[in-house]
Amino acid sequence: MRVILLGAPGSGKGTQAAGLAQQLKVARISTGDIFRDEITKKTELGTRADEYVKSGRLVPDQLVLNMVFKRLDQSDCSGGFLLDGFPRTVDQAEGLNSYLAKKSLKIDYVFYLDVSEDVLIQRLSQRRHCPGCQMVYNLLTNPPQADSVCDRCGGKLISRGDDEPNTLKKRLMVYQELTSPLVAYYKASGHFAAIDGAKVAADVAQEIAGHLGGAKI
Ligand code: AMP
Image 1 (tube, rainbow, N blue to C red):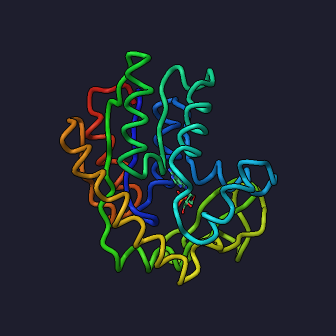
Image 2: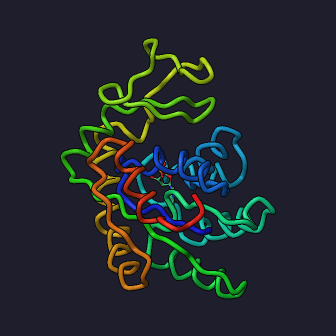
Image 3: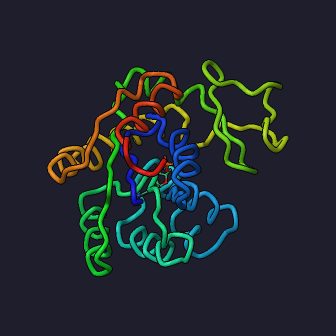
């Protein structure tokens, strides 16, 4: 199965993607995680992406598309994949369509996590993440058991640099301008469901599972 999770920063894509990919037994591809990893490792791609990620802008489409296609060509994606944070522009969506069409494949479901800007800002300012294992916490709704320590791997939790107020504002503007048109784009393509992403994570997961209904989950 091939699934896209669409939504603004802070809409809960990452939280849902982790559980859903496991349930569907498909590869989870988070372009944000890949960029952060490449930046940490100081690879050529990481060095090129760094300035964009730091400032809350989108990495140029061609760089993103090359990276995603290379990732989708790997064997763990042959049984399906879940895309988290990609596509983020109409050009990226068109690029993905062409890539899939060449392989006679298609996207099975697009889930749009709909969350108001007030809730997004509140959530992102309380977000902490573990740079070691990528676990994400929210100090209000999903805090770690011990202060600033990752429950899963014991790593020290930090606030993402791009969750700082100014960069955050920029990311939300970029989302509105470049990514939100994808809602109409995918609505028109069928197998699209808008989910109330302001609900607690377990309820959002249940609603997604309900849409997948007869699908293998
Ligand atoms: P995320 O973790 O998904 O919020 O992504 C963090 C940052 O990585 C974004 O603010 C962008 O700078 C970059 N990024 C992630 N995915 C994409 C994408 N599909 N297109 C362009 N830039 C991206």
